[in-house]
Amino acid sequence: MKTPLTVNSTSRRDFLKNSAALATLATAGPLASFSSFSGEEKFDSSKMNGIQIGAVSFVDEGVKEVLDIVQKRGAINTLFLTTFTYGRGLSGRQIPGRKFPDHGAQKSDEETFHGGNYAIPHPEFYKNTLLNVKATRAPEHGDFDILASVIPEAKKRGMRVFASVEDQWRSDVPGVSELAEIDLQGRKVRTLCLFKQEVRAFWTGLVTDLSMSYDIDGILFFNERNGPLLTALGASHFQKIDSSRVTCFCEDHQRAATEHGINFNRAREGYQKLDLFVQNSLKGVRPSDGYYVEFQRLLLEYPEIVAYDKLFDFAKHQVLKEVNAAVKTVNKDLQVGFHVEHVNSFNSFFRASRSYEELATMADFLKVVAYNNCGGERYARFIRNINSTVFRDVPPEELMRFNNHLLNFSEDEASFDKLPKAGLSADYVFRETRRALDGVKGKCLILPGIDVNLPTGKDSRKASPEDTYAATLAAFKAGADGVILSRKYSEMFLANLDAAGRAVRDGTKE
Ligand SMILES: [Zn+2]
Image (cartoon, rainbow, N blue to C red; front, top):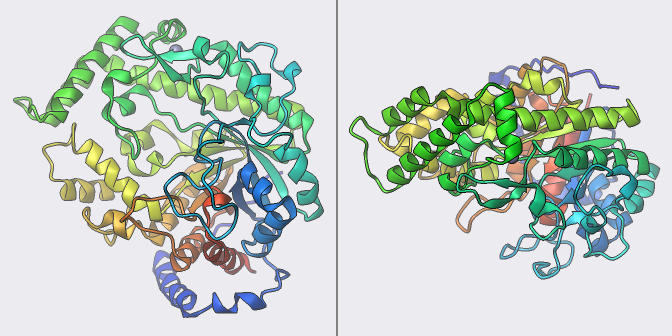
């Protein structure tokens, strides 16, 4: 079932030379010649050239119309349809306050967006969960069922269809409160605890339901959650730093800790001390030995901090394994993929906590986030976050340069102050794709997530056709098995979709 990996031997020097030439070509005017493109040109259809699309786009623009656009203009042969989520990243129109792209309804859905299951849940698949499964049906588009509506039209066109499922909830779904994680202060939060059997039963029930009830080609599973150590430090690009809200300290977690030989009370005590360290650091109260040494000392005195963080990863990976097994039980030919979040790109600790080779044992493909435009703003935010606590003694520019070396980013990436406006380069996409390919050692496919108009701040990088083309082509030059245009069609400007489509054709032609 797995497509053999295409190992591209292009050297980095050749790549840089080629990408410079191609960037010039892109600027020189293929856009102008788009109108003459028939959509019939040959490209390597064994590659999975995907795009993420939510229900609202089909409702707003029509199923055939959307498929026409993505197939002809974006050279797309694989659809990743947002089927379950309560999040706006994968679902809904353009996020509130940002410019609408040049297609779809030009009105915010802030008031009507709800989220949930955009297909029809069948209760018989969810016997062992406390969640009210009927209540998870997304209400905002009436009877519209994204899978039932899109699959027949997609199959006619020879397009593959994957159901995207994301671990994102809202607190008013019946059953969520009972399954919620408990934070360090004993408060319930909006995330569900992965050590609760009822939660696990929901995920396996959902993917079984989708695999049995619809003629899909597989599942793409999203879980962007981090363990308590990263959350406490805010060591990612998006979290605000709230070390007193780390999770999870529920009874099921306590039991799991004991089973893994971790002293639960010591772990909690360690996180309380870490909370104090973070709060003092944010206020600029410098420990006598400096911020980094104090942090290091905490880890030495409380190895349970790291062990408890790893326990979260254990549960997250268990869910991935169970999702994969559940889908394969229905049909061993269905493919299962996991989204590998952006923090994996920026944070060396996170990288250390994941092994591509291990992830490859659980999945047929990995969608590796390599968003370069918003990547500048996000990487800068990550540096600023770690620069406010553990690495507070290091000037941010030096910290970023040091981190660039650890992460194997090019020395040519923009300086810290210019990073949000400059974005990361196409070379970053190349390197992250290559790292993933090297990591999985041919045991699963690598599909880099390509940034097509991910929303950024007012003064930050905005995607252009030139850099969309360069980033998409870089993924293929690195040897990717396809790409996934992200995050969602309802955010994408068509000139950028055209540019991605040109790169797919140029990157995959024989
Ligand atoms: Zn828990």
